[in-house]
View 1 (cartoon, rainbow, N blue to C red):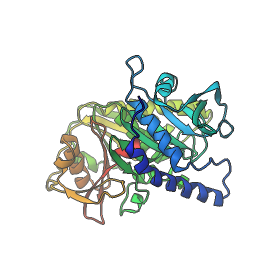
View 2 (cartoon, rainbow, N blue to C red; view 1 turned 90 degrees about the horizontal axis):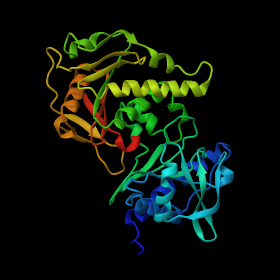
View 3 (cartoon, helix red, strand yellow; view 1 turned 180 degrees about the horizontal axis):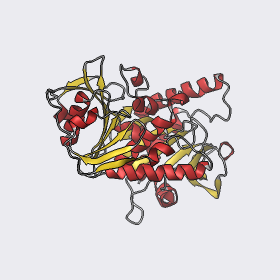
View 4 (cartoon, rainbow, N blue to C red; view 1 turned 135 degrees about the vertical axis):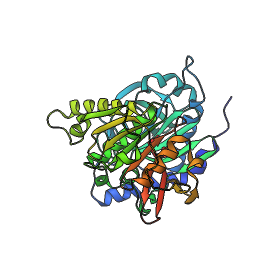
Length: 377
């Protein structure tokens, strides 16, 4: 029996189409080459619709993890082509899903006389190529490649059931916007994807991936003022500081592939420490200073009762809330730490997948909580 169409697909298609049309045309004006075709609304609707219904199915008890890329074989590198193309329909997608569930592997989709079909499997796709990814049952992410190796894709929209969230690409114009958020929102600003911010984003993704919740505090290099906001002595202080991530964060010296693998392993090692109760502390140079640390209110400081909160989603306005409305003890600790150590940054991952970056805003005169989980999917 054919399912009814997924209404959210039609609702988000105009915004997605406008996004790709704008950025592909801008890239052409800059003289960029090897750009993909701009998908029309019908293509966007069909890809989202097929991915959504496939996400609700099971293949031998497993939830399908699928990534669809709208690109022809000629637009990709070393494509694996099927002798017979597969129709873009939920049943067929579910059956082939086990072959493409690992990160960075996509099913190639193109337009034929009969509509859309899956022509094969691909790992390398062009910049601004439309990608529809199944994150979990009923949760889809529309994104595109930013054209840089190892760089996280740029999220354009997130669909969960009947909820549609279109990313507000102008959110980085907010006063005192953290560099992490600026990088994640950097649709057409490759310069924002610096090596240091790249490491921060990878740490955030790793923290979110272990699904146990975590708190990472980033403090200025060479500073000891942050110790006033942590219970002393620290049970798991690191002495001397662990510097492997700091060294890897400077970039590859020889073999880039080996460097990327080592960087990923080191990021996951430090990201894993955030699963331990308490805060993991690194400095701005990515030297690990401690983990499992207990945050306390600085002597003489006031308890944080309100913070501003935003989410880079169209239609979501700034709100002033209590930290307890954002989350539990990790969020309260993060808000208090950033309030007392105003040159620090706090990254908080919740067990349910929410991710918040706390930074002090001099313009607002208070702690600002940036919800960024929609950008990390």
